[in-house]
Image (cartoon, rainbow, N blue to C red; front, top):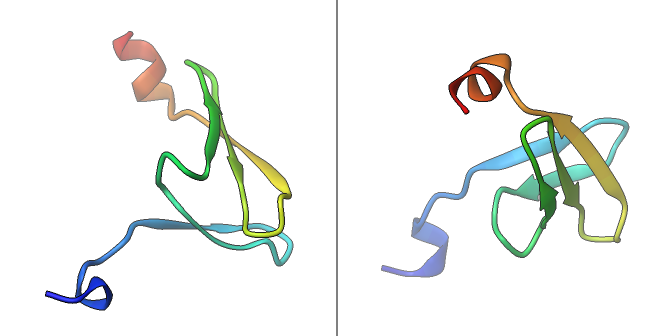
Length: 57
C-alpha cells in the first residue's frame, strides 16, 4: 500500500492555518487542559482538551 492510501487524522487550524496532522511531529505540547500544535510554517495553535478527557484523569 502506498502512503497515499493510508488515511491521516487532521485538524483544520482556524484563520487559514491549514490542516495539521495529529502526529507526534506536529504536537508541540500536551497537558490535561490543552494541546499545542504547529502547522507547516511554524505557527502555533492551541486546542482545549474535551471536558470528558479532563474528568477521566
